Length: 49
Image (cartoon, rainbow, N blue to C red; front, side):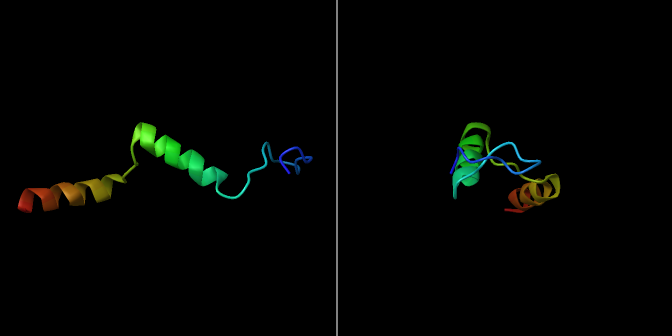
């Protein structure tokens, strides 16, 4: 499958779960991105508790 000809506009063929595995590895290395509004809410709750 991976050696099949690519469709126009694509640079890679992904197998099921491959994108998720890559994202997991990135998250483990760099941490999980949290949107600023969510982070502010977490900080506000932390201060209250």
